[in-house]
Image (cartoon, rainbow, N blue to C red; front, side, top):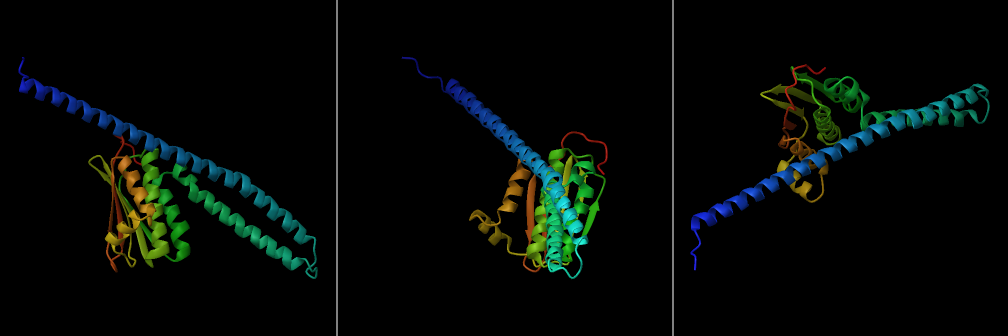
Length: 253
């Protein structure tokens, strides 16, 4: 009876292990590609909905407002229907403004047309200024970013600023953007009340605060990390670190 060669057996096990690791890495890469494709589809759908809101519902509301104003012009101030008509015009104007804002928040056209930094400025004006929150933007020389990276940074900024407006009771907030050694670094901060990060993570595991968890997973799909730094009474900072795609030499606007 032939005695098994321990060296040959170890070599066989080594080959099987290496093959298993290679298959796991291939499956992980395939999963990441599928997940990134899912987010692209999601953003395309947001873009389509934003366009439909602006070009469809928005234009219909504009036409309705115009018709109501023509009717208002045909009535005298003593007409009993005049106050109700004025209320209807005001409601139409507010609904039109809400529709336009929702359209832009779904997928701001400025992000696709002008780039990330103008989109961050627009985000500060749209979300923060109405709440009395001033927003500072610091942006160094950043290579031109691909669409996936631009969208990732914008969504992190949107999540952070929304939380600042809703929960932080902050007076100031800001975005910092820089690049170096093949990586993009982005920070979103506020000087608000802060919170217990460990407790927030526990809440996230129980289904609360899922926005930050989704952003962290989205960053990981791009090979990046998203770190939360906060303490009660010491403000909040979200730090995104993600590799740059390719060797982009041109500067983003």
